[in-house]
Length: 265
Image (tube, rainbow, N blue to C red; front, side, top):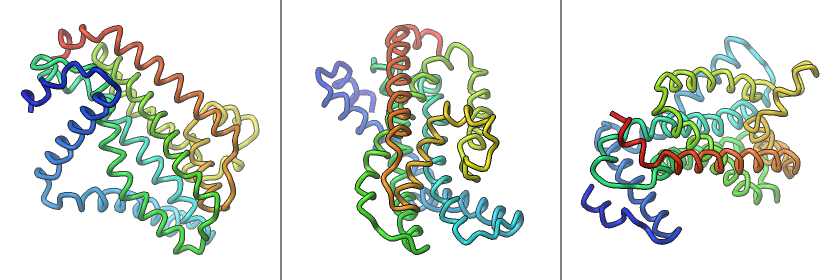
């Protein structure tokens, strides 16, 4: 693999960078599949177990009782799972690739990009199941569904930026990895995954206004559950965060591009 990558170590165009990311993502996915007894099927089973556990807890144990709660919960959990898995794997992508860095030079933003692409491919399978589930709960296909690629694209760029920024910092302080895990747990409860944001007191509204993931979930739910176009202000907020994180993450990775191979074990 290293010899193949060597020929692509100095890509001269955006297309070459994308080819490199796709090649490495496919190689990692093939490796993951070969090491798993269930193979690709596990990409579907694992998130279904995740979704099923939360559905049982909130419908049977906590007893929300609302017939619309399950599709509400699923449209929150599926995008959230994609975001969390992208960040969780992406933030450690540079710190865990020290061996490859010493063998061949690659622009460092390649590593978190590959992790996010991997998570996105797995998300695609589960998202298709989500669409089937939404239809099964009686939510019709509307013209607003045409905006789903835009929302998905915004989320992809947002989590790519967050993953790049986290990946750029963790090699200097490995304990930040633990902080990311705890922040993800907190963020899950501050994003309206389980409850409508409107149920929270107005004095805490600013927490959600600062949280682009909450805006993402509201956009998905507007399209899939309400059949309406998402709030343009919410989409603008997501886009602004995405540009900010991508810019800061890219600049940080570029600044320490030659430093990482020296400090990553």
